[in-house]
Length: 570
Image (cartoon, rainbow, N blue to C red; front, side):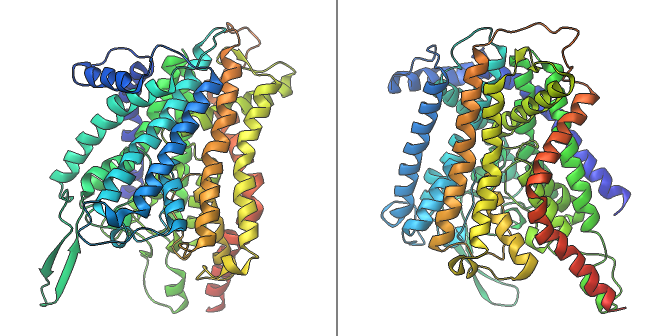
C-alpha cells in the first residue's frame, strides 16, 4: 500500500461520481419524454419504431401491464437468443466453423444475457461465432440493460405521482433508453477503444510468426463495440476468456480507467435521475453517497489484503513484499482492487484480475459486495430500485423506533409495501444459500470443483451469489459447463432478476396510487448523515446476518488457515 495507490482509488471513484451528475440530469429528461439534443437524429427512428410495432407511447400502463410487457419481452428475447446459439453453425460470420451450443449451455447463456448477468460457462473465443457475439450477445447487452433502466424509471414515476395509476409505457421506455442513452454512449466509448488499439473487425483470425519463429493463430472479433456496451450496460461478459485482463479488451491504462468508470457511472446516474423525476434531489444524493462509500470501503479492504506480503513466500522465507497473485500486472494492485469492488458492487462481472486468486479476505469481500444485493451502485436501473427497496426497509425500521407510520419521499410506507420489499430481499438468500447447500452435498455438483475445503465452498458460494445477483464474475476453480451447473445457475439467474423485479413493480403500483404528502415536523429526514448511516446499517445487517455463517465457513476460515500455515513455518 502507498499514497499513490490510495490516490488512484479515490480519483477513480471521484471522477465516476462527478460524471454521473450531468449524465443523470440528461437521463431524467429521457425518462420524462422531454426533448434532448439528440432528437433530430433519433426522433424519426423512435417514431418509426412505434409505428412499426403499433406502440402508443402516451398510453401509460399500470404495474401489472408494465410487468407483463417486461416478462413477455424477456421471454421472446430468450427464445431468439437460444435459437441463435443452438444453430450458429448454420448462420453467417462463422469463419472458425464453430458448432452450435449444447442445449444446457444455450439455455444457461441465453438466460444469462437476457437477465443482464452475462455469466459465461464457456471459453468465448473458442465457442461463439462473430454472429452469435454481435446479433446474440451484444444486442442483449443493450436490451437487458435498457429493461433494467426502464424499471428504475417506472419506480421513479411512482414516487412522483399524486394518486396516479400508471407507471409509464414499458415499450416506449425500452425504445427511448436504448436510442437516447445506451446507443450514443456506446458509440463514443467504442470509438475511443478503437483509437486505443482494441480490434473491431469481422476477420476471424490472423496467422502470425512470433519473435522465436513459432507460428500463432490470433483470434479477432469486433471487440471494441461489445466492450463498450459490456461495461456501460453492466454486462461484464467478454469476447475473450481472460475478460478485461486480455490486451485486446483492455490494451492501455486509459481503457482500464474508462472501463471502471463506465461500469459504475450509469448506476450512479440512475440515482440522480430518480431524484429529479421524484422531486427528491437531496435524497438521491444520499443514495449516491451510500453507494460510493461502500465501493470505497470494499476497495480499501481488497487493496489492503492484496498488498500484504504473500503468505506462501513468507513460509519459505523469500524476501518479497509484493503480492501480484491474481492482479492485473500491467496496472498494479490499486487498479485491480477498485475494479473488483466496482464490478461486484455493480453487477457488472467484468474483471481485470482473478478473484479466485485473491487472498481469502479479498475474494470474500468481492463475494460480500454481491451478497449485499448488487445495489452499490448496482446494475443499470436494478441498482437504483434495489437501493429504494432498502431505503423503504430503513424508514420502516425508523418508524418502528419512534412509533410513526414511515414515509419516504412523501409516500406513506404501509404493510403492503414492506411485505413486497421483504419478499424481494429474501429472494437472494433463498436462492444463493439454497442452491449452495445442495451443491455442497451432491456428488454430481462436487465433480466440477477443483478445490476442496473452505476454498471449494467459496467457489460454490461465489457461483450462486454471482448468478442470483446477476453479476456474472466467477471463482475460476469451478468447471461449470456441465448440465447440472448450467441448469441450476440458469434458474438462479432467473430468480435473481424476475423474482426480484415483480415484487418491486407491484410495490411501485401500490406507491403510485398514494397521495403525495408534504413533510411535517415528525417526518424523518432521508437525506442527511443520520439516514445515510441508518441505510448503510440496514444494508450491512441484511447482508451480514444472512450470509455471515456461510462466509465464516468459506473465506473467513480459509484466512485463518493461511495464517496458521505461515505461523507454523516460524
